[in-house]
Length: 152
Image 1: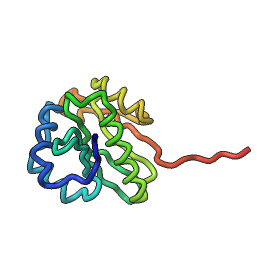
Image 2: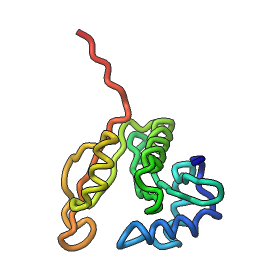
Image 3: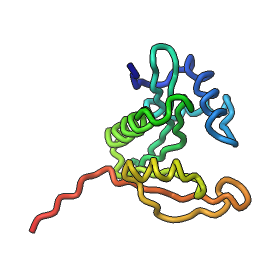
C-alpha cells in the first residue's frame, strides 16, 4: 500500500536516486535538501513501506499560484497511478495555502510527461525558449485549482 506523506531528511537519498533515474540534468542532493527547508509541507513522498516510490516538490508564490518544482516516480512504479496521486495531493495542499492555480514546466519533447499532465488537467500556456539549455525549450502548463460556477 502506498502512503503519501511529508518528505523528511531521511528520505533524501532515495529521492536523489529517483532524481538521477528520471532526469538527464538531476537536481543535486544539496538542492533537494534546500527545498526540504524551503517547501515545508509542499515536499511530499509516496512510500511503500520504507521505500520511496515517488516525490513532488512545490512552492507557492504570491499566495495565489502553486509551482510544481519537480515530480518523479521510480521507473518500476510508473503507470500505477502513484504520480497522479502525488500531484493531486500537492494540488490539494496548494489550495490549502490559498493558490488558485498550479503551473509547471515540461520539456517540449517529453511526450510522456505532456500526456501525463494533460490527463490531469494541465494546459499548455506558452513556450519558454532554451529553458533546459540550448535548443531545449519548455512548455509552461497551467491548471486552475478553482471550480467555476456558471448560471443562466
